[in-house]
Image (cartoon, rainbow, N blue to C red; front, side, top):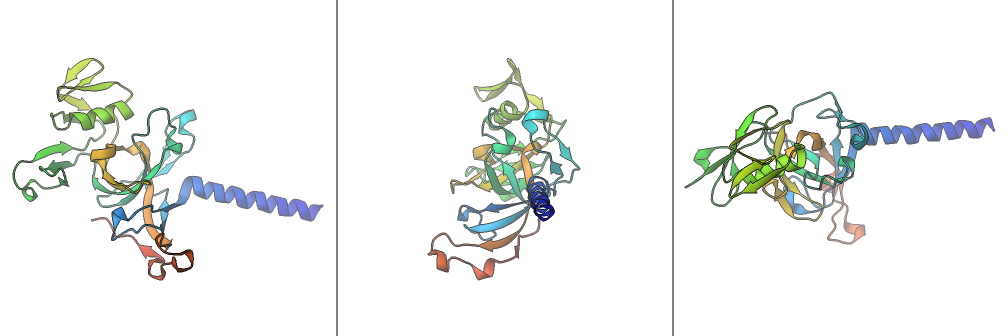
Length: 246
């Protein structure tokens, strides 16, 4: 009987250890599509450090968002983050996890040309260009006609107030505004979602700091989804480190 109790205790301890690692320190994600090549391939199994930006405590729906320790996201980081437009009724931990690269930090100004693609420098865009400031906690951002929808989406989804876009202007709590002071940091991300559709913050919106899951570290191994299972293992994708931040 003592032997069985010892085995049971060891099994319970092992399970709890795995759960704690999964909740607080690390997770493995499967890349669903080739939208992030050449760094990531469909079928890559990627190691994600959940503690890279501070440990986000689980069950935020019960006692609110909490993060133990903080560390800044760097431009160019490969980041795992929860879908920022899943809807207010979907708990944070149950939202789909996207994988993408951070292209804009809080306070950065990104420039957009006629093709809609962002650039960090105005002189890299030919012709007309429109600036969009990535919101930083406690700093006012000016609301322009071309940024009203983006900011309105962020306010509605993450600022606990109601916003509406009326004639390319932003209305917050029934009042038309020209500037808005955000209550947390936001990031501009690219992403390849589970659907396989390549997107960025023009599609799914700005990513708030609360939705950061962790930083991608390396590809553990990779299985090619387009070939038979017995040929799917990619020998050249084992332990591949992701490119460092720019």
